[in-house]
Length: 381
Ligand SMILES: Cc1cc2nc3c(=O)[nH]c(=O)nc-3n(C[C@H](O)[C@H](O)[C@H](O)COP(=O)(O)OP(=O)(O)OC[C@H]3O[C@@H](n4cnc5c(N)ncnc54)[C@H](O)[C@@H]3O)c2cc1C
Image (cartoon, rainbow, N blue to C red; front, side, top):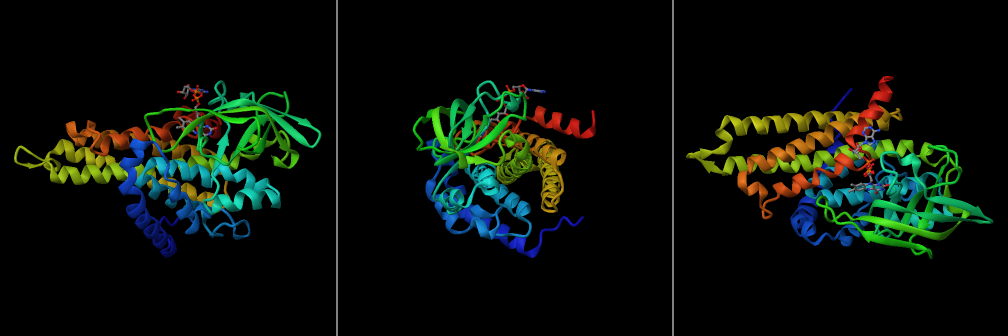
């Protein structure tokens, strides 16, 4: 297959890279300190049309011919500037809006999807619960049908965008049957009585991307807020979860590239024993290993994005892309800290932030162990 980006894709990368260099990267440190997501960026990117990359024009999207490749480029570039910003926007533009795009009726799309793609409403996705993480299918949040409504009760945890969201796609049990075959998806407006943010969780990684506990107490939603068929929620969502893993791989590439470039620059400027430290074989080899892991992970991730654009099943491949890219990013960022020596530990240098942020893709969208479980299943073992 051809691994070259088309001229349009190269131009797209240049455009978003310029935006990131001007509007995101210079604020990354401040956002890391304040732990606040810059809402102005959301609106700006919405106005520029970036938030609808994955969706067709009739739904307010960009109607691109290879949306997965474009979306991966978008996420990689954002994470190069700030992994926290990338994490918020990757979630907003994929899994958090996918159910609504795929199964929402016209009116729901008018009220929620259109403003989300314009950056005027924020979306989140609530699957994980305190007792249901890797084993998401054991979730306990319940949705019970009462007349024309469903009544939802339960608690969600680690929900990205949770404190800022205007609406959340909530996965809830609609049948006592165990596992995947009893879970449905609901669009829940966060202004609905009974919905609340339990708390914002402090974390050491991706500071400006929030992680929230969400509480649902007798939250009543109209029956049309059921997204897709009852009990088929997680089965239907598989494609989106695959996309999400591929995009998390792209986010990993972004932070890895930022760390590699910073380490390379630093190694050429920093002198010890009368010469730049890049002239020491140990440092040079570290830089070589960083680049080699980054470039191979990159090639594979875009290969998977291209497969997704061909409509092929990418279940194993997306898990492999996330496994390889997130582990590569964590390695690259660790080596970056080491190239910086003592300065790598100092908050005034970005190396420590890159390393902290590189832990996010190791867990979000499923841990590396779970990626291995998925890949092994694909291997038939
Ligand atoms: C920053 C952040 C943002 C997140 N955003 C969201 C979000 O927006 N929406 C959402 O729904 N969720 C979100 N999550 C949740 C995330 O998907 C889960 O944290 C993840 O799936 C792991 O679940 P857990 O934390 O409960 O760990 P556990 O499932 O308890 O795992 C603990 C350990 O056991 C291992 N383990 C578990 N089962 C197996 C197995 N079968 N085989 C081998 N090893 C296993 C794991 O690999 C891990 O090392 C987010 C998490 C984080 C950290």
